Amino acid sequence: MEGRDPEDLDLEPVQKVLLGEGLEVKCFHSAPEPVTPVVLRKTACYIVSAVVFNSKNEVLMVQEAKQQCFGRWYLPAGRMEEGESITQALQREVREEAGLEVEPKSLVLVEEQGTQWIRFTFLAAVTGGTLKTEAQADAESLQASWWDRESPLPLRGRDILPLIDVGLQYLKRAPYPALLPVAMPCSVICQRLLLVFTGGRPDNPGADLWILLGSDGDFGRHLPITLAVKRHPVTWAAQRLVQECMPSICNQLYVHTWGILGVQHSAGNGCMAGSTDGICFNTLVSVELAGGGEPAGRPPSVEIQTFTWHRVEDQDLRGLILQRLRGGASLPVHSLY
Figure 1 (tube, rainbow, N blue to C red):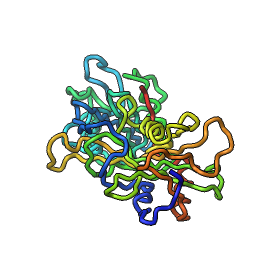
Figure 2 (cartoon, rainbow, N blue to C red):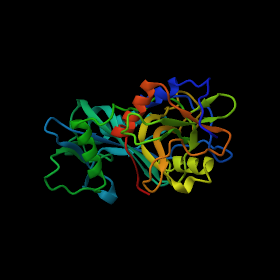
Figure 3 (spheres, rainbow, N blue to C red):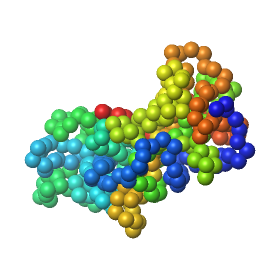
Figure 4 (cartoon, rainbow, N blue to C red):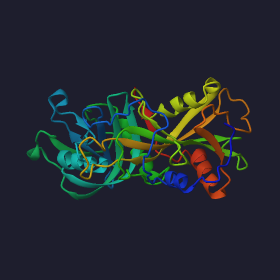
């Protein structure tokens, strides 16, 4: 459909998403039938890891007690348990493995490993407790210690080195506002997409700006929500949506996931087990012509009646979106599939 400006469009939810707030998940615009709720540790696995620095910028490490990696060192990390929020899982893992109480400061990275797991890495600060010693060794860990990142240390895996780097970069200069999960229920792993098209380069203050909107007929027009793809739960949903609603031109378009603006998850709060194990990722995505040609003045045609482009006229909202695009000011997400 040709881009237009719906009179009944409420732009406040768009601004909330940009500011890291949550919105209720009411419907799905791109999803297989039927939609089946995910169940933690059965059809979904979430892992948390903590990057914690002391005043010397040494990083907190724990020595593994598991037989397959006995004696090696790793960041405090582990699987989320049933009934936990993401931050509660983080605090429990650090307490059990390192003996310390921590306060999460911000998510610094989200990673996906195909259908196996989604890992949430937090920058956190110590608020109490005492460092676990060898005398306190148990099934969770042998001990904890601070590592200067230069002294030789037998690591369980080098995959944590980029996590430490990202945490240190955020500590020195936060590239985006502090981002913590918002307590809002969701039954599946899905994405709410702030999918934008600019009629010029994002660094051009005069560029036209459009956002893609979906409608289910009941709630008016709002940001589209698409069910996650199993192999790429976080990074592929936008690509699939573009293929579905712009099939004639999708092979001429470049879809770029800039990052996550917000994460929504609820620990259950008395709900039936498995009904709130899902996560909604509010994600910033742009679409542009592939091949580096001059961008068109109008967005590509949408071929499904439930979608339309909305030209952003509100200058404050427009400026906020362009700021995110220019600065990449959103939580990075990596696919390790």
